[in-house]
Image 1 (spheres, rainbow, N blue to C red):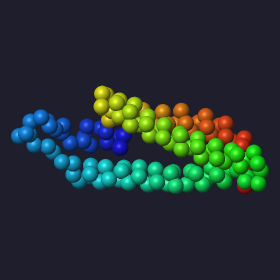
Image 2 (image 1 turned 120 degrees about the vertical axis):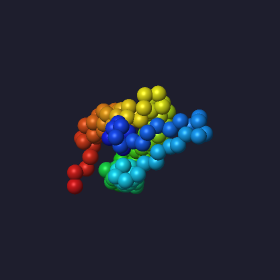
Image 3 (image 1 turned 90 degrees about the vertical axis):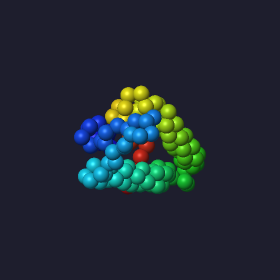
Length: 133
């Protein structure tokens, strides 16, 4: 979707929504197929992440250990808090950037922000606590 938002050849011409007589060009052909494939991949990835992440995280705790049992409930609280904050940021900051600068800026900033602010530090610091089976 980032490529399609950035490349002018993959987008239809802009519409004038304030002129009732203007004609809007609909996306079609390979551009439409690319859009549907990108939407499918995004939905498929998010559904897999949200369905499996809690189970994979909970598997890292031993319920027989009292310390791990307490940390298990904290894990779910922190996970839900992080998902809610991520949703709030994406609906406010990223959409604001997309509105002012364009969709290519919004999509282009989403990936580095996700990678730098979430994945790398969390993955680095959590490896010492993981059970390696």
